[in-house]
Image (cartoon, rainbow, N blue to C red; front, side):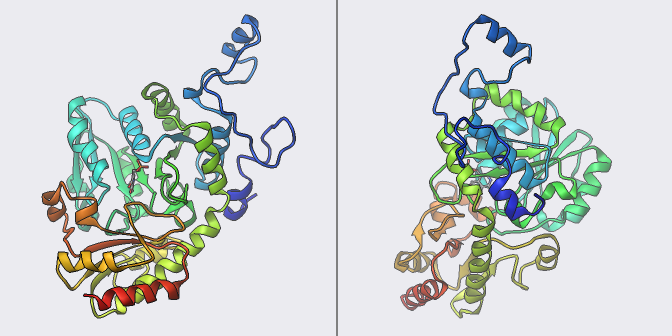
Length: 389
Ligand code: PLP
């Protein structure tokens, strides 16, 4: 099966053994797996029989998901984790060592940045950022000990896009590992491995899970890296459980059709907001006004359901605006059927307003995650909320 829609449905599942010819992959809700006798244990360790010993090392449903994601991302192998943060932290700790340096793009998920700046120094690992606006000068920012380049595509919250062809051409020459957090893109909108990226990361809590009801993380990539990450996962213990694996497997079967709707609704709402006189600015890679529009069109198959925008009003009035909306929940996630909205400086950065200010995340900035509601219902809801401010 070559096309991505077919892969979302069948990869990792079609040829997998099951006991009773069920169409779906069963959930084996167990923590440990028994051996019939000591001979079987020895055969297991000697690789004569397949099997699993203990659930922290994996479970059959999880393996089906991992195979599906590896096929979707066009990579050798994928690993699942208990959260996106767990995927990121385990990956970095397994690939970067003492006195080595990570370069990362500045518009980036808050906790990834905190991990780089507050936790990695404890292990004598250094991280510094490159402003996305200066990405063409990457040469200036690398150090002799730089071993890994990290970027989200699109970035959080300003949905910036970096040119993978350019970056990977550079990192390859310098023998620097390229790790892309592709949470905002999904393999439907972008497949970084096809540009030569070494590691692809996801918070599967977002689009891959797609229903605001599970936590999971993904690392996909070249075998030589994944083989280094897996033993760290076994020890650090950020494993996904069998039931969540099943939920994720089921979600991935609809990823292509869900992303089609997120892409369509995201663009329609971004266009609506850009036309509105009370909107100051919209950041959405599918709009001509976005600083990376041309690159996004070339590199992406779609632009997703997240729209960042600012209002021509105060922080207080911006709160009034979102409090008046009837359709989106006020919540900090994205990628599910229900639309969500958040005033980023308050919901995400309430205790870190200085950091928000430094990042140009002001009180009038909103992040909207377009779900599957009817677009006319959504714009009618926006209209009544705009009238209140
Ligand atoms: N990466 C990105 C781009 C995110 O937006 C997030 C969470 O918001 C994460 C990683 C962390 O994922 P999780 O919340 O599943 O740990």
